[in-house]
Amino acid sequence: MSQTSELPRWDLEPLFPSLDSKEFNDAWSGLSQRLDCLEALFVKHQVGQRAFQESDKAAFNEIVSAINQFYEAWTPISAFIYAHVTTDSANTLAQAKLSEMDQLQLRYQKLKPRLTPWLAGLDTDRVQAGRYQILIDEAKVQAAHMMSEAEEVLAAELALSGGTAFARLHSNLSSQISALVNGEELPMAAVRNLAFSPDESVRKAAYQAELGAWKANEVALAAALNGWKGQQCTLNRKRGWSNDLEPTLHANRITEQSLEAMISAMKQSLPAWRRYFLAKAKALGKPKLDWWDLFAPLSGSTQGWSWLEARKFIAEKLATFSQSNGGLAERAFAERWIDAEPRKGKVGGAYCMPVGKGQSLILSNYQPTFDAVSTLAHELGHAYHNLQLARVPAILRDLPMTLAETASIMNQTIVVQAALEELPENERLVVLEADLQDTAQVIVDIYSRFLFEQTVFAKRKERELSPEEFRDFMLEAQKEAYGDALASYHPYMWAVKGHYYGIDFYNYPYAFGLLFSLALYQQYQQQGAAFVERYDDLLSAVGTYPAKELAARFGFDLEARAFWDLGIGVLTERIARFERLVG
Image 1 (cartoon, rainbow, N blue to C red):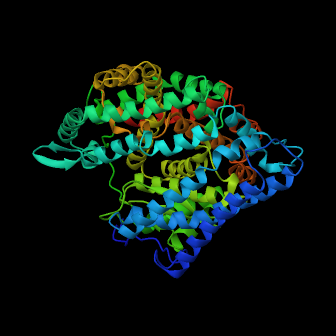
Image 2: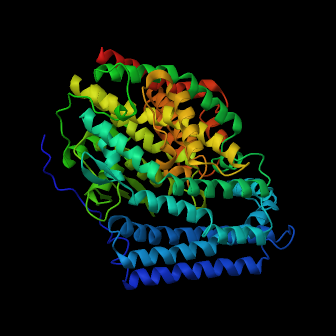
């Protein structure tokens, strides 16, 4: 297939002409004025300074309306700035605007310690909260776990030089680390990319060089991890949480019973994943996989995917699910919502962000592989989700991470399933292995990361931890997750993953999103077109209801192990298919 199609850059003109244009400056001034008005409303209604009054019904409506307007104005401005920063890191004007935006956001965040207890004191019936009930319900929990207003404001300000600074230390330091691989000095990102090399000697050399580089920097990285987790342990204790996992459950809108049921299903699936690892080892001609083999490609793929071919395949397959989904994808391609060209100054990876009015911007670094096609379908799923969220007020578009991946994984599943049905057999094996490679990270490796973080929090309450202890905890977690299917492990994954710094338990929500979406996909297979309208309604409502209530509307019980086994069943069937193809 042809791979010569020119990769697009996104068209930002529909948002603003430029960062120094009159249109952008006027919008920025308008955003600042909306924040001024919101602050004035807090004074007018004495938010956070008195008990409930009957007049609070009008105050509630007025303040929620003002927050919605602020969010609507914020979305295109922040997207426009972030789009420039992430595609041109040397753009000093964009970096300056990003810093100004952080200060504006801090002004808004400082209102939260007054807003939360005020909302908690409201009666949902007396203020006729309607679809905004979740704001009051969640505020009641948050208010029970708040320090005084002065302490909360101080914590927000100190975070910039405390936990946030430690998270930035990890980000800045890890981005500057390099390693010597076969005589060539390479940045860490390039070293880790060698894990995908078809040459085992290259993969092994990169793995060994990577471990050496992390070890050379382990003292500073351990200080960063100690700093962030130490801050969180202190704040969680001061706020009265029973443990360090509990606040993340609230933020992700799930119950402890739901998490336990999901973790149980993941743990029970580990023997199947170990069969997958052994089958891949067999395909590579080894008795067991080493860590450096986890991302090794299998031979047999000859097909390249040009941009035009990816566009056609994705739009066609998503349209078989629903015309609106396929139409949204085609619109994103036609109207240049996607920046696909890899280039200097552009961040790696891929993401999707809303810009308002149901539209999105997608960043990718496209390569002519099916894995890149799958990633693009994934990001277009986020765009489709943003389209459905445009049906609700802006304040109800704030998604918990557990539900934020629903549409993206659904899209990815549709495209992968189509490829497994339509491509030649040798291509199917490569597609299937790439998919299992990704999902193994979400089920098996995420399980190890969850175990590691549980241990770190338990130990960090007592004292600071040494680099050696972090290494030992990571190896213990990996051995429990991967078992004896691997011949070697990676003791420095705590240094690799930025998810441990700046946010807590940034792991189990990925597994939740994958298994939740796969369960929905099974329902789609049973119901066909009748499923789609309910699916769109679910996507629009993920910011309106807790996960348990939202799932119950689809007849799912998140606290039942059987629900999670639905998604696990899709994955174990793929593992069995892989074993047959390898055999």
